[in-house]
Image 1 (cartoon, one colour):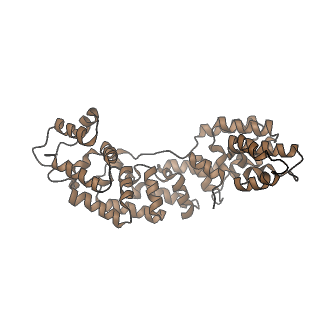
Image 2 (tube, rainbow, N blue to C red):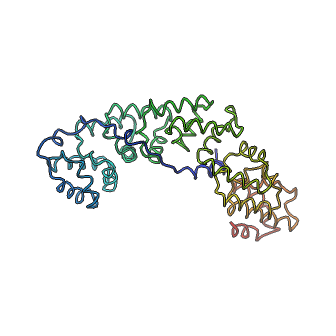
Length: 379
């Protein structure tokens, strides 16, 4: 099934990364570290700093900072073994520099008892070598966790999402996801969403577009749910989770500014709330963009503001690629007495491109041969 323009517009706005607190992220076990890396006779920090510069591509300044965390290393053998293991499992130089920039203490890990065991466990969970690379880079401290902790968290997300491919994409786009406590943060938020009537299928939609919704504090999520209900969207509505997603991207201040914008075009508060209940995604556009669309639809296309309020889906469409070229094409057809029946704006504006060309362009190529060129030039 094809995504609607509204869904595409909404998905492009969701590029927010939320990181857990350091206390959540640094849940590592000292027993994971190599005996050789925690003994006496440690190398001087200056030697380790030089190692990080020459072997890992660090800048001298960053190498000096990181070397202070590696006081237990007694020889090059320990970090060399870690780098060699990572390289043998698909990590290139850029990957390793990225990982070590966040988690230099992974150079202290024992390869056989810690790294190899964790990578085997991830493979047994169905992840490919490439998947594991992305998972570790997105959650740099995950390789410090006890293997049982990693497996527990991964199995939880697998059961919830149902697809390793989707899960890997989630981890790639949202760093630190494994750093959050399942029992203290994730599960309570999920139960709160389920209490709103959100099914597992809708929950997966939320995780796809806005995974940070289940990692935020409970009071923040509770306030967001109250905002949705304040807009008159009941929990029983099929659009409740979409409105939840939309409002999660908008501050109260920005939402109020958008309300004032539409009121300036003649909308009432009831018009604004009705539009949100019908098509919540229209508010994801910037104030400037929404104003330009309203000005075009009202001043040039001649639609009444009340007409647009009843069809807010028009405001989710691209001004330059959809609204202007299609309106101008239809105006050109009507100027020649073509396109009988005067199709409604919503009909031809929402029509998929292929069908639009078939219905309103190709069918008139004999009477209006330059039409397709005219339409293409205006897109």
